[in-house]
Image (cartoon, rainbow, N blue to C red; front, side, top):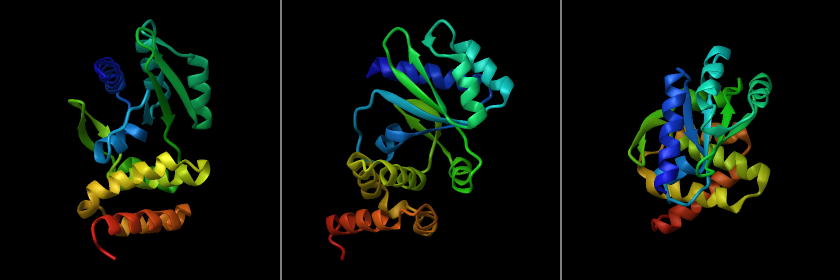
Length: 191
């Protein structure tokens, strides 16, 4: 875990040094707000300019495996590329920010948090829930729904339910939001 923490801290430092707006997402974000679970990678949304991306890629040379051409192409089509730490094999998926209404909303709502002692930008708990519900819709992953349950259980009284319902309807994940909400209500003794 310590080496994974060191990799994340180094990567976040390089992203910030390049001036790139970012947000940690995926299982790292759901572990912060909900039930921690082991993961071998970090998912990070980035929104760089071409010059910022070039600066980041240059700073990663030597210490990480990556394909600069793949990164540049991923930026053009707003997809993602991988960075793998040469020393320990930890991986990060750097996901380019998309110009879709929900994607812009969740990125604009990111917040400062502390993960493993590292100060960084993280998606909000509501956006972790919505992103994982959206992923589960496409992938059928039960793990994503367990992550949603964990975040919802621990963040229940702090969640912006109007925001959750609004975007759940637009994203087409209302049914799974209702199912997980019902499970958490049962656990809380509510009906």
